[in-house]
Length: 461
Image 1 (cartoon, rainbow, N blue to C red):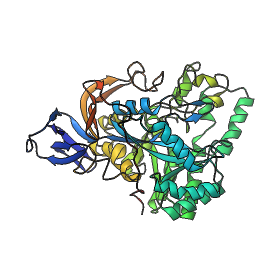
Image 2 (cartoon, rainbow, N blue to C red; image 1 turned 120 degrees about the horizontal axis):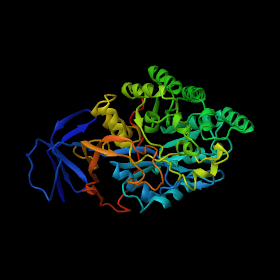
Image 3 (cartoon, rainbow, N blue to C red; image 1 turned 135 degrees about the vertical axis):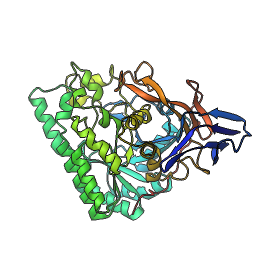
Image 4 (tube, one colour; image 1 turned 60 degrees about the vertical axis):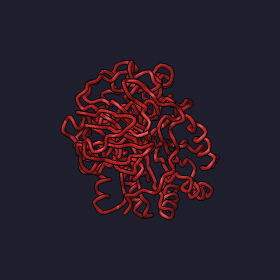
């Protein structure tokens, strides 16, 4: 089937142009002057709209085990919600349990996702146990298309790795050309602050933020960068939330070190004030790293403009308020960490365009093009160009909408952005040439999404 998307403004990271986009089967075959090619089986009128590459959310957690429960979106519900928001690729995390192998973990996550995803997907691997076996298995993981490995400086006793563990894994990453992703918070110090707060009877959700101060994110980020410098490993800091960490990343990048970082919409729009809402309401906003004071937000937007922050992902990890967040009703340390967001990332970043924080091209770059290059999908994803997969979004920049749990499609009972009025809305979404969103309805199906074997990062010096 041939599809022509006509009359729109095609926006890539490199510029914009009035052009028609021609799709044959699953692939874009031409980006042409308007009206040059007219023969088609299906025409999509994009007059007055943007035509952009489908978003890539490089940090999601579907069906993730945490604190005795699981994140509430399945791969089916989560990828459908992603499609509603203009995201046509997710990269989720396979989570190694202690005492198990990386390859068996990968098999387990394939069993969860295969045949269930509405859009394309890939995996990162979380290394919870550094030993000779897991280090050896990094190579077959790379051969299987999983070439980024996440480690934690937080959560002692669960995911935490010592500096020695991190050093060993980074040396292996240097040997293989793979990427180490780091959750950079000083978990040992944080645990002491948490214990002190609980001993003093401070149990409210806001204490989650107060016991994870930005200084400890900055310190851990600096330490991770130093370890990467010693080993020569590429380093990607996940969900950066604070200026302290951003300053460390910027300094490393200024020396030419292969250090990259992402932030998330929640750190651009929400604050620790949300965790301090009356009663237990603040539990909705508990995630790690925590929301910061509002003065950090200007620094993060500036980091997006200077490319010291290269990507915006969601860290989508939804836990229902009514029966999951409530596990920490009397102890903030037992509140499942995570917030929903996969459906609204593209819209929230478009608000940055509306507000003059970023350009249209930068919007596309941080939400699609850079994630594609960072994680080995360039050429296939992240661009409107001949030969690329036909992951295409028609976006109406003039439409208005109000974010609400009553209307979102994520499988969670609240919205972190409840009542927020925004400008812009996804109108049509194509995933590899198939219309999955149009006319206010979902037209996709579980199983349409394919697993993506990824190449090595295309940003490494």
